[in-house]
Image (tube, rainbow over all chains, first blue to last red; front, side):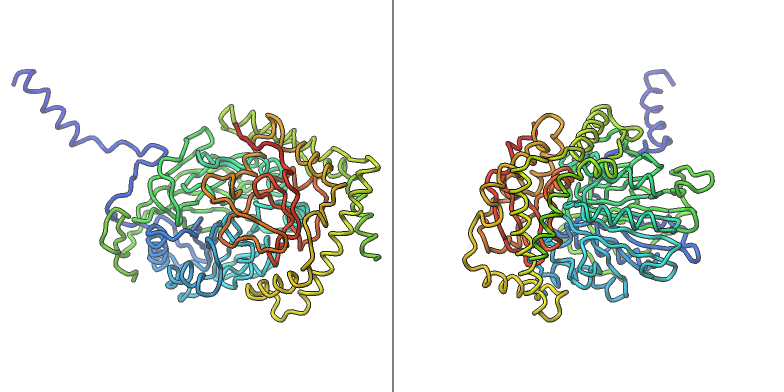
Length: 342
Length: 224
């Protein structure tokens, strides 16, 4: 065989044998056909499990698809509660409004007894804090503790969550936060709020003033991780001051395709489809998995608690992935409605 | 009356306690590891600006006097709010908040713009706000005010607000930057500052009623 004939053959062989290139930051996984769903979290005994969904307030097929996918994963990864990252209900919040905008898409989870905890976003009517199913107790900012098998309010140990109203960071709120953080003896202190302190989103980006005020408190009192929305994309930051990892997860009902500007703070990003997250905390380890509405895993890994022995963020995957058998959910471009969740 | 006097004292104390607040709150912030140089530099500037803002005391006699009147008006409104709220059953419900709005609206039938933001206190507010929003170090603060601000944010539509009207339920709320919030006179929990366009609006945080408006309170909010 001469060289002229060998050339094309080698190219074909190379294409057939070489693995696909790794997905670049910014999301190579465009909205595509449904994919095999796998659970990468370990499902350890006595772990704290929850889901994270941001910016679910806009009526969209993406919101509906994400809600179905969250429910499908709940079947395989039973979690007790969901944190909502703001912009949860656009517009009016009368009983009929919240029924349509929130209770209908999330009915399977609500029926399963899953509890939601929300923070306010800039598109939320502040009075949505009185809406019972958001469990805010009428407050703009509040705290709760999660323990294995459920949620216990305001007792120590385990994982403690702090919900903030970053649209209005006034002194009473900052004083409250400092008091609560300083008195908490929980191993894990997790913050969630709407406006991200670190974001590479082109539309909004990092809220630098809020960072200037909040980050010193987070570092001083050993906060472990923070979840925000606002930018309609997914981003996990590299560990920042104090080893804190900041997540942006604002694609539960709105999406800005191509809005991610990958920066040096970006550990992983995705802006090609709607998404949500599931998280499991066991001992000093936090396992995370970000999932697109088609069920594809867009990010997963393990974060060791900052301050714990040999604390070091790692992106090493968790245990062997477990297939999740959930209904196919099609991307928006597909006209066929997705089948109902199991 | 005692409430009003104590509120006024709190207001005057607020003006003198700026440096203390600075020590308590404004810990210098260095940019986090791995940040792009532009954001790192911007973050450092913002941290310095917030620190400086909180350390600024406003002690001019006429300003303290104007502020005392403002605090008295605010305290009077807070009393009205509390009285009307106490009359409602099931106060922690969305429906109750609407009933509260109607009750306060009826009680303040004759309220006019400038009842609380009196002319003599308006320059103080404009100056304090300008100190936080003007200049190249305030880009992030201006950006925060514009985001979700009806009329300024390209993703929202302009709204018209009037005294005693309910903040339109479909309209987003502007973010009030921490540096602005921490430098403005403190409010009771029932009242919030918000920006609508460049106007500073005093909103009942529960009834969502517009209580007063300070026109053109913010300087030009261009981000670039």
